[in-house]
Length: 103
Image: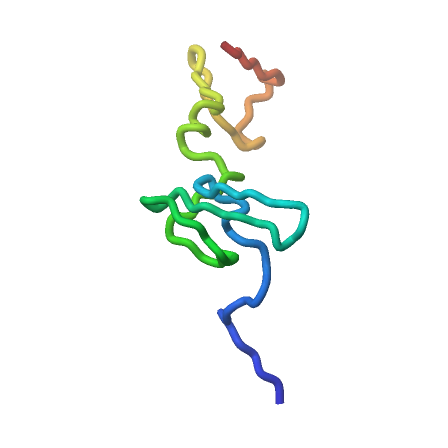
């Protein structure tokens, strides 16, 4: 008979602090030399263990809404043309080129 457990507590894995924007992580040459300061709390606290789940986690590998708006392209129609994506079946035959104007 086998035992299947869902949502159990993991015993190993990377800490969330490694990719959190609010963490200050200092590592030495040995694996035991690691110092983590959580800057999401006031006053800042040392975290002596690997973190599995955190309510104040902010992933530094993802961009926030403001950063995405800064790099987004704005599509504005010229004249009677539509802006955006059109299915190939709705594409007029006389329009075989696309014009992009970058400011």
